[in-house]
Length: 429
Image (cartoon, rainbow, N blue to C red; front, top):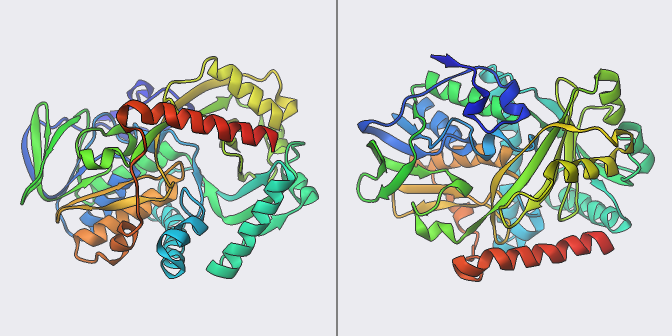
């Protein structure tokens, strides 16, 4: 059965423009497999596809629809690296391990491109991404980052001064940029639905509308839902910010954070291309950052305005429109056709938190707003570990992670207070 029902996902330009996708049944009764996976987002589907291609029997259980969470409604920017600077990872695990992890992060970007081509996914891929500077200190930070990438990781990105940047992005807000031609942007929901289609073609069974109520650990882990259960030799937890209570020891290592994206009405090709002439994706480097890109139908997709309380900010469309007009004054008065948001998972140090619980329950979380490429890499690395090649997962598992301070009662207000300080720093320095 094929459905074209935007209400099945959070209402957004992505759901309104998504490629029609098949519906999947609920979990009813008992099912068995070699591997059972919680979450039909990019991490879970990536692991499922890798495992099925290796000949394993895989079941994926999703609480809502394929791509319902962050995988299907994020900013669509596909960028090398992780949620923290590579220098942070080097400080945590040493330079040799950091170099390997950076190489794997670039593999994650390449993997997105490969899967789009191999599985004919209509993901609206476009080349190019720029990190842009607003203030002189941003220029210094970006140039230092460029040197670190070149000297320690052998990765070349281009420095653009104000004139070079203005030739592609004629916004008065920015004074320089680091441009990476190998990164890019895409339609994240279409990409996620395309991975699901590829996984099903490889033999994966996907169940939707089946929230997991509990995980029973043991020789054969079991995921229980209201109407049934799935059991396997191995289990993968890939629900990220939307899972709570399934593995309590993981919960305090991440914090759910709300982030938001808006889509203007179609601007027309000429007007849209006057904003971003080379069709790249863009993000500034403020703590409370703005990020934006053009859609295939010539809208501006503009994101930012994170909420560390997880509550949507008041008058979100108006706030987003004002932020957009700071970047593009010529769009003052242009409204958004739709504004949507969702939760991402951040770790305390913003580094990826991937590993195993016991011998047969695997997890990947802590993508910290930088997950479109890293989720695919995580799925591949978890699949390798399940098949007996655990070296890469062990490297990530060696990254130390602490609980968020304050416990469940205080950690959210403490984080809100900390983020207020960082926002003040953005404004004053």
